[in-house]
Length: 436
Image (cartoon, rainbow, N blue to C red; front, side, top):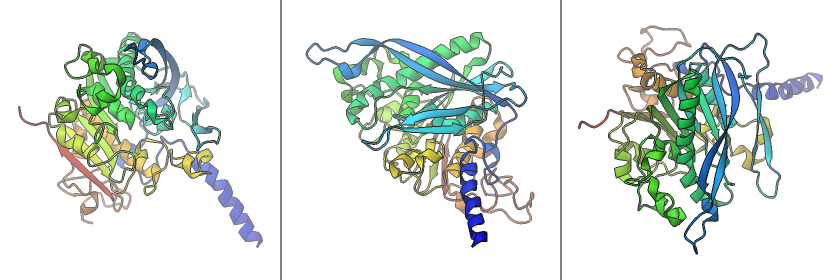
């Protein structure tokens, strides 16, 4: 009995220790390019003001207008750093809506970054990250810190969304999300280039859910001025930014080399761009989605976006059986007591740290290739077979160690960078731009 009690105590102690691992640091089963890079990571918080934005939720139908207000934005900035020896890494915090009438859920997320550490160089590419509705950038440290360790400056926007429990506020998201992204890009391309921290002509965008809608629009998918999304925003406030509108250029990011959309909103009933709008997208595109997404339909969402964006080099990574929360950190301990709180973060089928590792592997290959110009990353993306599970790797083909990474085609059809028996449950489609 004593032995059993001791074992139980060890298990109880081990669970928090495992949960406290920074989400940006992956385990032994992670694909090759997921692991942290050679840089230490710094983080600092920027406070930006976006002036004279239409307050769409106060639109006055009687007078046909909306009042203007300044829109406050915080941006978490992660960057390659020279962290002082034995510097204490940051512990992030955020607040989430709980199931009414429960009070908000407060979470803590351990990080690897050091607050306000001095930068480790200059001229890095800039990556702007846009979270989903009512979310927070600290829930995406699986990718923000990870990319900063690999030589990217990563700006996570805190959008200040209205609560997701009130679906009547969707028009604000549809109007403001691409405007926020374009505004932050312009601001940082100027200020961080002046610091010499970034190269303003090497920019990438990453967005999850409504952030996916935002980054696709900011990357050049033109909004349909007469479609459902435009009609949802009252007073025609979105139409000037749509295809052919006088302010269409205000939602475009200049210097853009790549865009990543995770479980993106904007397809299906919203039909934000239509086929014509997605054909306008020429920026290389990586879509990542689960084909059992209960929030955003896969067939009319990510899959249709892949099929219609014919003028872009494009990739669609699909988690078979995966759901909507593919863009989030694993659930912190505070979120594991109630199913509502857990569902902010976790997937019902996939182990979440495994999903993040796979995503980080492909995002690294994609950005390294299209933003940094590293063509050695192409074989990680242009895989020889669609279904990961169908790959073969003869025992006689080097490397032969149990935990070795696949060399890829032609020696092996197990996707390059994956370990034996660990390329399962995924599909990857890819296509080059249509010939002009």
